[in-house]
Image (cartoon, rainbow, N blue to C red; front, side, top):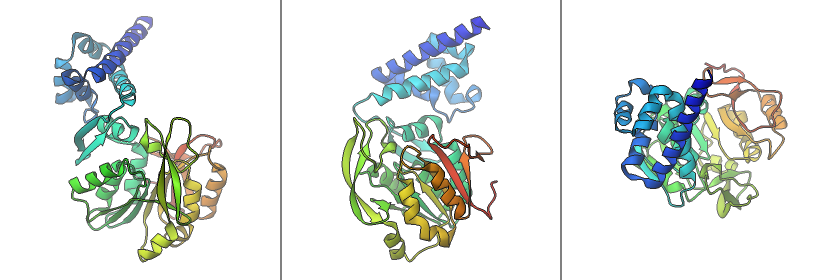
Length: 332
């Protein structure tokens, strides 16, 4: 047991260092690492692409894969992501994501997950697809670069509609390019503003290493500030003709309480499923859950493996994803 632990430790150490060096060096060295860690290779032992990458890898990586393949790949991914987070210039990758063509700056968490792991937030993805039937109307509030927007567009199909709201001008070009490159203009409508209870101009705080965590909250040290447009959801919904909404995804980094207030009339009328974050460092999460339950929703915590939802913990002091189902709806 002790010897196996030592082997695993050595494999992890070597792999992390190699991945960091590969990111710094680039070229074929980085190509080998990225082809090894790409999770269109989740079934790694039988993946011809990964097997070919391993054959081209240095001796120590080949040996590590033979001795401790799981530890090797996890460490390569960790080293790869850690090194990318320190890159000052964008790191662009064009690749296939779930059958779609995308181009992303993979320094940031969401596109890195899509590029390397092949899925961003498996539990969230499951529920968004579960709640978005063909022909549905869906709101993607906080769309970022559009990874989950593409999942929703595929779920609702050509007769459905996805309204993607993203106020951050730094990620909007990637979101729009994903829509254009995959000929989804007839399904996805991109809105370059945030939603709230009233029209306003607010400050968007953008972290340096994870633009998916941009938030309409007080900026923290090291974050950049941008002024962005916020529009009243009620006014926007009325201008659209108050369409029926079947599913709402909320990823607004601490602004959920305000958005639930803004969405309340629509929630009462349409009874859509909700997939959202809880941010207890910004508001009383227990009170927000009580409000959703009182509105007729069953609230569960989203997890990353089947059944993808479990009862809420008693302690709601940590950030978590939740799924809120109208009481007449039961989980699959």
